[in-house]
Amino acid sequence: MNYKIVRLNTGLKTAKTASVLIIYTGGTLGMAYDESGALVPFNFGQILEKIPILSNMDIAITVISFPEPIDSSNVSMRHWKDMAYIIYENYDSYDGFVVLHGTDTMAYSASMLSYMLNGLNKPVIFTGAQLPISAMRSDARENLMTSLEIATAKINGRPIVPEVCIFFNHMLLRGNRAKKVQSIHFDAFESENYPILAEAGIVIDYNTNAIRPYEATRKLKNLNNLDNRVMILKLFPGITDKIMDACFSIDGLRGVVLETYGSGNSPSEAWFMQSLEKAIKKGLIILNVSQCNGGRVIQGRYETSKELLAVGVVSGADMTTEAAVTKLMFLLGQNYSREEVCLKLTQSIAGEITA
Image 1 (cartoon, rainbow, N blue to C red):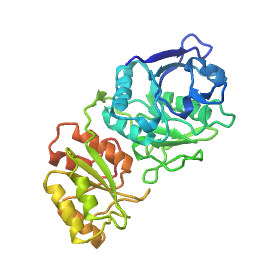
Image 2 (image 1 turned 90 degrees about the horizontal axis):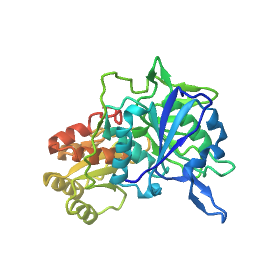
Image 3 (image 1 turned 45 degrees about the vertical axis):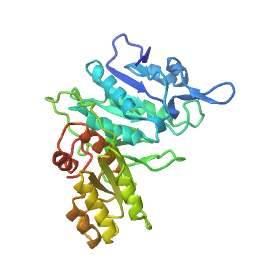
């Protein structure tokens, strides 16, 4: 891919104390209004004009932009591979990485990169904005500035946050625990099933007990074999056997994330369980996650979920849908047997599940 590279002239010192690679994929943060009032991709070579305070940061900043900025609604496996490749190839040259990304699918991308970047020992901070950087009340400046600070934060020479995260509206969240919940407010993301990693006020208050610890022996691998022959099926009152069977009969389908009610409950009618059992017997992997933003699947807690356990549905415990579907894509691409995939779905790869 023909990436666009810009090195920003920040700081007054010749030798900067830290370095960050910003990866601009697209999204609202990198947009600005042109003369006609339309939103167009922003030229990062002029970012110091938009955020002059960057000039005072003692950080060497390089920006790599996708050749054509993408709306996050168009993010695909190819873009995840591009992001992971850029980080992997530049891993030894920077203290941390900031990924500028549209908010709509940010939680999916952050989840997937947390799996792909196996052995990660440096910060990868996803951030974005609800308003363009040129808007008077934009949240872009604060989100970007604080993400840069977190990406370079160290204690005793070690990064404080050596994992994939999302920073938005003063909150740092584990990437594979986050979910977008607002489209018009600045507090766009939440993490109901895992503590906030840090809160940015006058100082950045890190919750070190919740952050994945630094491990000196980790070596980064880019595990980029993925398989997107999966789907999400959300249960609703009135769902029929024809709908279920049609979904499970999709040619080539390998896995289904089943969004059930509450703590993993589903209809208990015979046709429903028969449809699931038939699909599982022909090799389909069905992963049960809750439609609720918080809580966890506990198969067998109620009568309506006992049969799911009996027919071979895998419990997704407290995973988000975003973390679950990307994990399924990731594991199906790793040349595991069906049994190994089912087992690893219940185990933590990058802190996405409380096993």
